[in-house]
Image 1 (cartoon, rainbow, N blue to C red):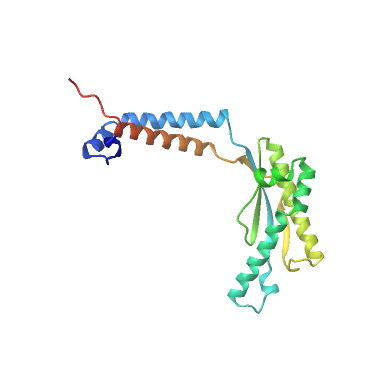
Image 2: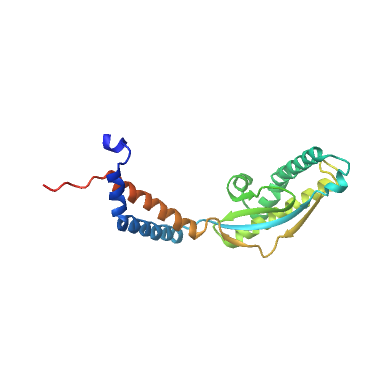
Length: 206
């Protein structure tokens, strides 16, 4: 027990370096295992739709100072985020996909860090086509709802512009890349191999 809790000695580190073939083998085994897991139980597909958001700061707040500009951007961004996750928008996506709103919010949809310019609307699903349809439906529903709110002069500044930039032929890839699986497996087994070398004492010859 004391050996496990004590820091590695110089002899332990030397033994670790001498066992480089063992932990390199462990790293390769981890990489192979990570690759196998990726193909046996792959992560869901992730589709990305893009909506351009232009706050038209120069027209909306031409006489404000920098602090007031920052406040304006934060306020309008928060309003747009609320629209993106609103019941009306989620219901439109649910109607288009047949999925429950709670599933869309908690599992399927995610929004990139919003700012001026491109907002990315992500959708995850085990089916590639369904992931693309979800992301497209969400981006379109958001764009339509934001436009309706501005037309009705409800909350949003009327000079803010929200335009769907890419809602068709969306880029779709796995939500976690194969390289991430390979790297995680390799690093994990490398660490395990090193710990085995450090903490499992070789048997002393009689």
